[in-house]
Every structure is written in C-alpha cells, then in structure tokens.
Image 1 (cartoon, helix red, strand yellow):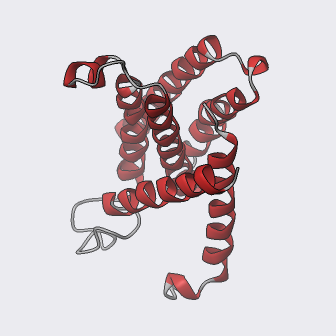
Image 2 (cartoon, rainbow over the protein chains, first blue to last red):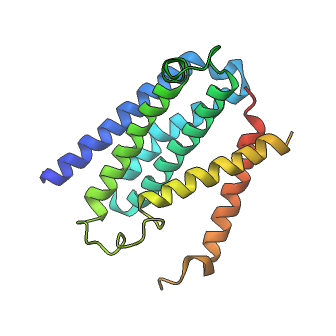
Length: 165
Length: 31
C-alpha cells in the first residue's frame, strides 16, 4: 500500500472516530425520542459516520465528501453557537465563555473539518502552485469559500429563526 | 465546459435547496 493510500485511510479513520464519538455523546446528552429537534444532530452525525467517510475513500466522490463534511461542520457550529446563546453563562466573563458554553465542543468539531480538508488536499491538490489556489481565496476549494458559506448559512439560518415562526 | 458558475442551472438549484433547508433549520431549532 502506498504511503499516500495509508495516510488517506488513517485520516478517514480519524474522521470516523471523531464523528462517532461526537454522535454517541449527542445521543447520550440529547436522546432523539425526547425532543424532535434532537433528530438534527442525530441525523447529521449518522451521515458523518457513514456516508462521509465512505465518500472520502473514493476519488470520484471525494470532492462531494469534502463539501458535505464541511457543511456539516458549519451546521454544527451554527447550531451549537445558537445553543450557547440560548443558554448563556450566568455572568459573562472570558472564563465563562470558554468553559461554560459549547465553545470546546465547537473546537472539537473543527477537527472534522481539518481532517476532511487534509484528505482532500492529499488527493486533489498536488502543491501550492495548483491552479485552483492562485489568487482565488474566496473561490472553491479555498478557505475563503468556507468563510463565505459560514457567514451565508448563518445569515439564512438566522432569518429562518427570526421570521419563520 | 468550465463555464462561469453563475450560468450553470445546477448552481441555482443547489443553492435554492440549501437556502430552503437552512431557513427550515432555523425555523425548527427552538432551544
């Protein structure tokens, strides 16, 4: 097995384990039968431990896995930030924002994004000179494209939350 | 081939679905 193939399996394994741990934690903390909204992390987690790792293993589906994985991370970031805002710490201090919100959970979720990006880069982008990069920070598959989507998805989510009662 | 992304119908369909999904998600998630 080539070193690159081995690395891909290891990274996909890391992605699977991080997702699986997060999914089990979610099921324990927010059991789906208790509340309909708990099915959101349940379903998102299920996709991220089945379809996403499987899609990362094949070159044909790798680009889709990269997008789906990143979007799931964005949705998780938005919904956990929403949860933290809905249940803020009693006194807002720097310490409380770090330790008494879902900040650590969001940070752990970023592992999934980084692993997905690592698998994508390993397979699709050979080096820094690849055409997809040059001067195109805001375009797919670069980081600016993800930032635009984080902002856009947050905005649309907020509109749905505020105006669709 | 490789046309500007805004001229592709798939881009608009995908984004319409994504916007609808995120509006719905914001609507149902009530903590």
